[in-house]
Length: 112
Length: 115
Image (cartoon, rainbow over all chains, first blue to last red; front, side, top):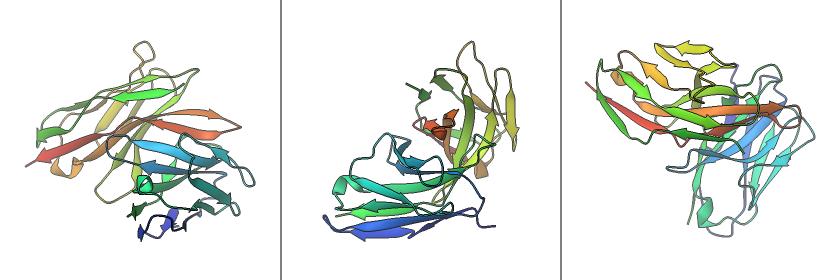
């Protein structure tokens, strides 16, 4: 039981490049989330998916897109990376029966 | 909207000292409250939770009590260890069917415990 997995762990992009961050969970959770973590600002919600087939904007969605590929997988795409998107990105999931979220190990992204 | 405010850090303690990290919240309705811990280079792990007023969450010697009258959920530990050095996040969940279990986080408090 791997929980929540994320790939890649580290990535360096040049301004304007695109990339997709992958996330998968094996806990049969309905809801999945993408956060970014910046120093002194805690975690901020980018997008979430309350169930397969639905996605909604969070607090800071600009510059990102998401795809809920199936119940297990939820990807985050940066179409044209900017230095302001340098951050650590976390994926999380939660079940319908519990309130807590379970987090992946994170992806450290640097945009130069 | 919902918000969570944590005491400013960083906090530096000696081993076996008493720890308190303050957390207050603003929310509509009756949220669930959480403390998450993040060790260096890792993701967040759930430390403890409380789902209703006067509940006490506890784990690994840490405790926090859901105080509705003061809208607080302060984290305490009687005797900290070097291995407790980490960043601690207070969070609340405003759960509904449309949005799942959305979490609102505080800014995080860096704890360093010296031997």
